Length: 386
Image 1 (tube, helix red, strand yellow):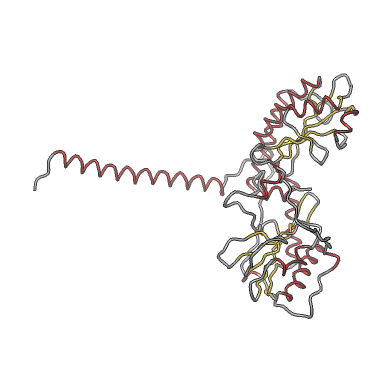
Image 2: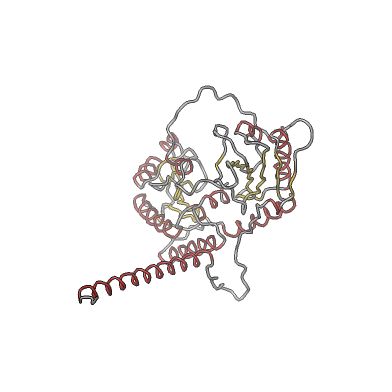
């Protein structure tokens, strides 16, 4: 059977279409692979000096059962260390209160971004109960206060996702993980804190009953010190000070009006905060240079010598962009308040100096990324919390 010219043309067009789709898919896949590679294997940036540079990094810990020494339940009745337990009063009937916008981002994370154990920055102890347990069985552990944040997670089985456990969490769990933060701005978790953490787990396990596993305290203490040193090297806070050139103060009532007009709101901490409209996260703050806490009452009568706008670099997403917003807000406020922008030594901040500060902020953000501490991420907020 001979094919007509139309049929031949349709066949050729179909073949070309298929080939085009295959080529397009290959290009898309190649582009995605390059993007992933650039994210996890960034090239090093040359150092400013001739000395060799050590790139910051986080050293993880293996959570597989084979990597740890299993500990089986033993001993007599459970007696939780009373120095590690906070006795909570009966809360009475539950009440419903509106959730502050600043808390919503943590309370309802996006799909796929639920809190998870983070073994690179937490000491993780896992428990394998003989049978599934609920949150009530972990009550003593949930109330433990160890001087560092302690989180509890559970999952239905080995293939399920981890779920954060609180006193009111429903359901039962076949595996439980207790996670103690190794470092924050108050320093590294001490050996005593880590020992108490494991003692809490050891005394809780027989009541379930459950076998449990954890890394040696010596290793975890060393990891905590190493992590604390890394975070100290990466920590950065930028302040832009506004003061009157004539040495006069800023009336509190005027400061409040200008701050609120600029999008700031007075927080319970006594600082004005500028928050992200969508996430509720704090972008930067406005506070007195002497560290005094503002209240509505004191602002009515106070005269503030100078104020400073502060950017907490590790705790904000896209720090360089956020610095640009901070700089614009600072300039506008300085103009409205009849002041000028100065550094910590009272020297005026010109365009060149502000551009230099921005480069430092961008460099700090780059170093955080290389250390797998994405600025503004939950990991960054834990490590750089006071």
